[in-house]
Every structure is written in structure tokens, then in C-alpha cells.
Image 1 (tube, rainbow, N blue to C red):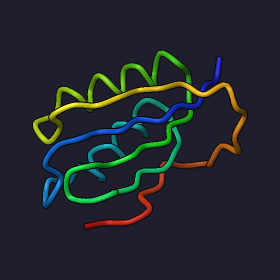
Image 2: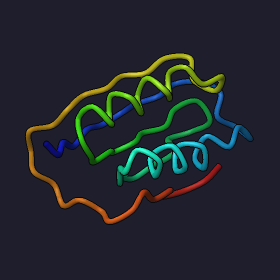
Image 3: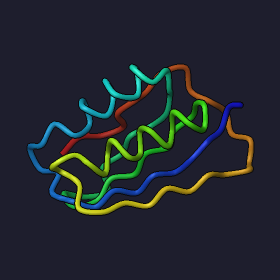
Length: 91
């Protein structure tokens, strides 16, 4: 079953390569979505894919050295799913 979710990560993201690392992991898990830096300490990821894949992606994110903490929430709203994983902006 396909799901959509929002992941907020807090950590030290300056010069960490977090965006590209997430892009590669999401691709490996057959997920699409959007990655956006809010600032050097917070990023938001909108992820689409199988619920188990999203949970696995979130756990992977939390276990990376660039992450201090995070939140995962699933949405019941049906959103337009992007075809790939996009990095919206960079630091």
C-alpha cells in the first residue's frame, strides 16, 4: 500500500551531503518525494512509497551522523506523487 509522509529532521546539515545521501537511499527503497532545507539545522522530507519503506528510510535517517532527532508523520490526504526524489534547495 502506498503512503505519503512528512519527515522533519534536526541536526547539523551544513556540508554534510545529507540531501544526496537521502536521494540515494530513497532511490534504493523505490521512494519518491521532496527534500528541502529549512536552515542548517532542520530539513523537511515529503516521502511517497510503501509504508514499510518510508519507516525504513526514517530509521536510516535517524541513525546517520548528521541527524540529532526527527519526527515522522503519515498523512491521509492524497497528494500528487512526484515521479522521483527531488532536492528543492541546497545550503
